[in-house]
Every structure is written in C-alpha cells, then in structure tokens.
Image (cartoon, rainbow, N blue to C red; front, side):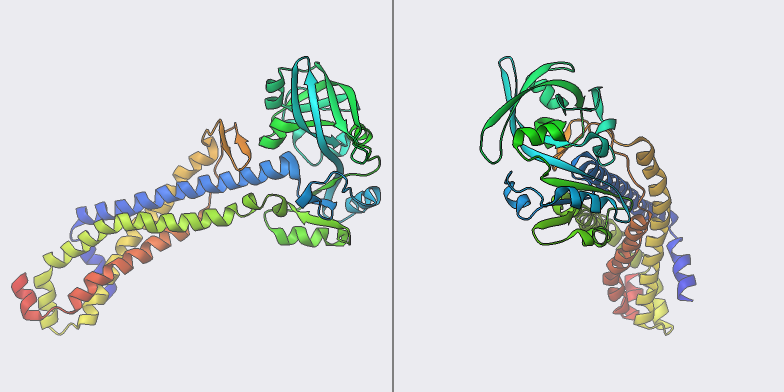
Length: 403
C-alpha cells in the first residue's frame, strides 16, 4: 500500500516531480561523461607509458633504478634475455644500454640520454616504428633517431650529420662518433621526445665500453597489463640475487595509481554535486510536506502511525531518485558514446611526463555510471529523512489546523 500511495503522490504535482527528477538526470549525465573521459585518459596514459618507453616489465641490476649508475649492468645479460624470451606469455624481450652523451652540429649542442637498442626486437616492445613523423627507423650503427622536440631544438632534419659523444663507463674516456639522423619521432613521452638519442645497441655498447652487457631488459607480455599481480606471476622465474625484476607499475607508480585516484575523485564529485542538488530536493520535499499538512493530519487521525507516514515520504523520495536516475543512465551513456567516437582534443597538454597531441577518446564505464545513479537514489532517500521525521512527529489536530 505504501508503494502504491507513494507512486500516486509524486505525480500529483507532475511539473515539480519532472523538474526535480530532471536535475538528478543532468547530474548523472554529467558524471557519466566525466567517468567516460577519465577512463579514456587513464587508458591513454597507461598506453603511452608502456608503449612509448617502459614496456610491460623491466629487468635491471640491483640498485640501478635508485642510482642510475652506468657501471651497474645486468649480469649475464644474454642468458637472462634468452630465458625471458622463452617464458610463457612473453611476446618478446629486448636489451638496452643507457648512458649520458652530447649531440652537436655546427654551433648547436645538447646534452642527451644515449639509448642503445636492438632495432629488430625493439619494434615488438615499443610503438616507435608507428610514431615516426619523418624518416625511417634505425637499422644499423652510425644512425640516430630522436624526438621531434630535440630535433627542433638542434635545428636538424632527416639526413643531417651530427657528432655524438659519450664516455666509457669504466675509464671515463670520451668517444666521438659521426652519426646521421635517420628518423624523427613523437612518442608522447616527454623525456624520450626531448632528451633521447636512440642508436644501435652495438654502437652504444662500443662507445660506453659495455659490450655484451646491458643496463635494461624490457619485456612485452601477451596479457592485459592493468593489474600488477598477473605480471608478477609471469616474471617471477626471472628473479634472482643481484638483479631487479619489476612490472611497469614500479617504473611509473603515478600512472599505475591513477585509476584508483580517479575513482576516489569521482566519489567525491558525486557527493559534492549531490550536495548542490540537495538544496533543491529538500525544498521540493519540504514544500510537499507543507502542502499536504491537512492530508497528513487526517491520516494520523484515522490511525496512521508516525512511522508509517515517515516510510511513505521516504518511499516517495526513493521513487523521485529512481525517476531521475534511470533516464540519467540511458542519456549519460548515449551522450558519453560521443566521447568514445569523437574524443576531446587536448592538443598541447602535458601531464605526468606525457604530452597529448591526438584527441583522447573516452571509454564507456557502464558499472561506474550505474554506481553513480544508485548513489544518487540512496542520497535522495537519505535527504528525505529530515522531512520524514518532521512528518512522523506531527500532531493530528495541529496538522489539520496548519493545512
């Protein structure tokens, strides 16, 4: 009976009910769009972080990550590399040599991070071959590939000849090599695009005096990499004394925690937005109480208990939240689909060491949208408790006089 009465009562003033429900609908739609965009942004950041540089997991000598000491190379690099490539769910693995160097042409000089790669295997790890904006991928010693930002700074183009200088990690003796710019790329990783000079692994190891040894082994896996635990399970056989084997989440903890941070942020946004909408809801429910004072007095006189009256008001509020939430879910997902299809242009925006040039496309978060709508229904119901308690305490005679 309470359900039937509550449903009938909320439609006694259709205009007020529709306007109040519409505010809830707009709130759910706005938060659904924010969830969609946030999910797309997190996915893009993970993709940029893993595809543009760090891969899905990395191997280093112990303490290398903390110190960046160039003398700390991976013991038995070749054997460990082959073992990694044979592991189940490992698509490929590649070795890198990393050091500090200088690139110069004419009177222009820039300090760079020297990055020696194995071109054949590196193509299976990073997306650099797809991110070349001019020229070609390096294939042999004597060639250099760099980010478009670094190329602009040094005013060079594909085919330019430059002098690359690096120091032997053991003796400190410097070596200079003539290199030709083979390709310019844009990865989205700011450090790579602005600082890295990418050369053949053999050339880097020769200049740094680390033949046969690498500073880093990067793995590409055949599994989804959002969760840390599955990655840990795959790389566990590689762990041993003297080396560090870590998933990408260790290399970039900020991006790894971004999903959880976004969820917490959205929960806060739900509460803040609802607090703004709550003033309108309280006003609507309070006005309903005043307008129906005589009705409530009659109901109390006929034996309706205060608790029954309170339940009726709370049920009406729950229906009001439901009427606003359901269209909010439908409209929110339909409008959010536009973000999935067309995206939003964040060209020139830099965040967490990443630069966005292409539009960020959203990802529909259906569970998140439903969760927001359910929270709105619950909060709407809770807001009505204040008015419900007032109604439960009404004296029949005073209520009828007030009406």
